[in-house]
Length: 172
Image 1 (tube, rainbow, N blue to C red):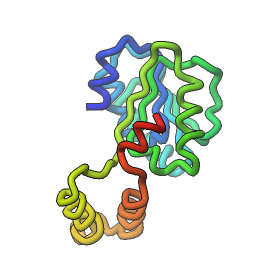
Image 2: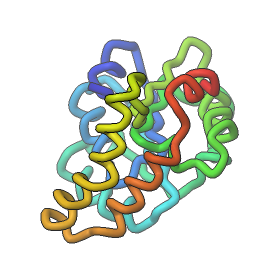
Image 3: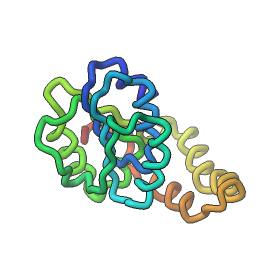
C-alpha cells in the first residue's frame, strides 16, 4: 500500500529512510517504474547487505542505491527528493522530531512524506487486546516460526513504548 500511495504521485526521486533489507524499495521499484532515483538509507550495514542481494533481482541496479547513514543527519542537500518513505522507522529514532525534521529538509516543496507506523487503537478495550497480543501472543507465534526471540522482544518493547497516534500526528 505504501508503494501504491507513492505511485499516485509524480515522483522522480524517492528516499526510503530506515530501509532495512529493502522490502519497501523492491515494492517501490515495481509500482513506480518511472522513478529515476531510488535511494535507501539505514544505519545497519548488515541489513543493507541483505537488501543489496534482494534488490539485485527485484529492481534495476541503475535506479537503486543503498547507503549507511543516520536519519538524524541525512547526507543529502535540501529539497533533494520528490517523496520520502518510511516503514516502522519513526519509533526507532532516538529523537523523532529531529529525524522527521531531516526528512522534511530533504523533501522538495510539494513532495510527499509517506509513513507506515504502529499506533495504538483508540478504544480502551481494543488497546487492552492489542497490548495483550503484543506482550503474550506475538512472541508465542513469532519465536517458533523465526527463532528470533530478541527481535520480537525488541519489536514488542518499542511498540509498547511508542507514542500515541495523536502525538505522532502533532509531531508531523
